[in-house]
Image (tube, rainbow, N blue to C red; front, side, top):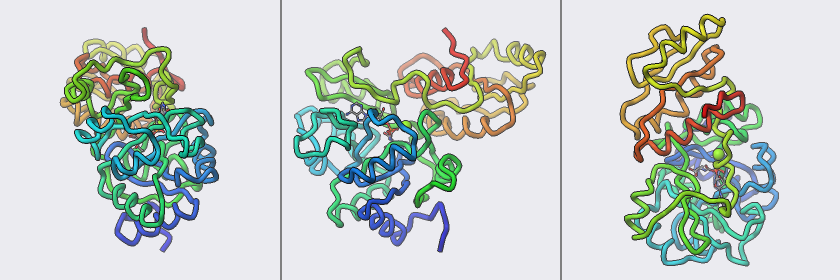
Length: 333
Ligand code: TXA
Ligand code: MG
């Protein structure tokens, strides 16, 4: 049967593993977002991921593995990696480590380091296990969206984005976390946070027993760290709760149609309006689906109520700031 997306039953997972082993791409659910998967040891399959995503060739991919043992095939495995893997794998944490000389350079954009993650989603794990049974060492998978766009958190988002070019998409329902994994660089003297996500800095510091500062100028390039990334087509603007009604009136006066994602009761006059959950974990889960829905609402502008500045909102605040920076974004100071 030619159904896409396809319910991720045992037969579909086996078929997906067979395709990966044959050098084809497969999209699959993880607990963070859907990934566009390829055999990480196949130069041809990896090249196809870059082509399909429209991603610059020097932006490295994350290689998904079952566990620390598989990770150690790809990278040198320091004590810090073991501690973090013990605490957070399988789960939404990517470790950037020094690549083994035997691991292919094309899996990591030619860098000396490689990003590795063991996802916890049962479908992702079953796929990795079935692929390992066919001799696979890992599945390279960026988020299954076109470069610079909003990551998919439902199977249908992958089809919406990739259209007729979409490979087999395993449908595992809505992603629980909803934003991409936390990325920690362990390839240098000190750990550095490259991308905030479901695992917080405080959780990392508690396990490592040392500070985990944000990225600096020497950190490796990561596409998720570009300013204009994760953006809908409609311009996104972040607004304080008490400024929403005034802003909507101003935009309406100019003939604009306004879509709104809002935590407070403001914005009753918006042309499309979705409520943002009050809890940061629930807001992260809803984030990309809300942006996609508002992007399709026929409005000329998306307003999002600014979120609190505390650590629990770090990942959501980061993605919203980037959404507002492009492609047509109204970047605010
Ligand atoms: O949650 C996630 O991480 C999702 C799911 C599918 O696992 N994947 C994901 O992949 O977000 P992608 O390709 O959209 O983002 C990968 C990020 C990029 O910012 C990339 O540059 C960074 O990881 N990265 C990968 N390897 C790296 C390396 N060796 N050094 C620095 N950054 C690296
Ligand atoms: Mg991405």
